[in-house]
Length: 157
Image 1 (tube, rainbow, N blue to C red):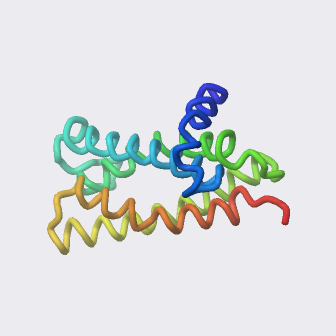
Image 2: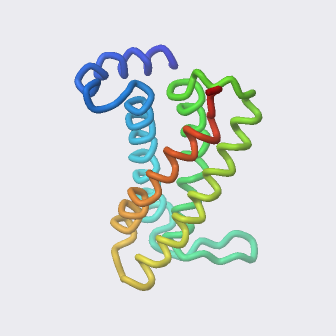
C-alpha cells in the first residue's frame, strides 16, 4: 500500500515541484486526502449515523456535530498517523512510539482547536455544521503542519 501511494504521489509531484518541496507536497496530498476522508466521515456520521440527533455515550450527551466529529476522529486519527509516518516524514529517526506519542499530543491540541471552533461556528455564528467543519479544518491545518514537521516527526538538524 505504501509503495502504491508513493508511486501515485511521485507521478503528480512534478506538477507541483516549483511550488512545494517533496515533503510539503506529500504532506499536502496525504493530509488533504485524510482531511477530505475526515469531512466525509463527519458528514455521514452527522446525517446518517446520528441522524442529526444528540449522541449519548453512557451518561454523556453530546450535540450531533460534536458526536460526529468524535466518530470521524476515531477513524481519521490512525489513518493520518500512518500516512505521516510511512509516506510523508519517512526521514524521521525518532522511534515509532515517540512519533505516535508526539503525534497524539499535536492531534490533541488540534482536536481542542477543532472542538472550540466547531462550537463557536455552529452554536454562536449558526453556520451549518459541515461548512463549519470545513472552515475549522482550514484554520487548524497550519498549526498541524508546523507541529508535525518540527515536533512529531522531527529530523536531526
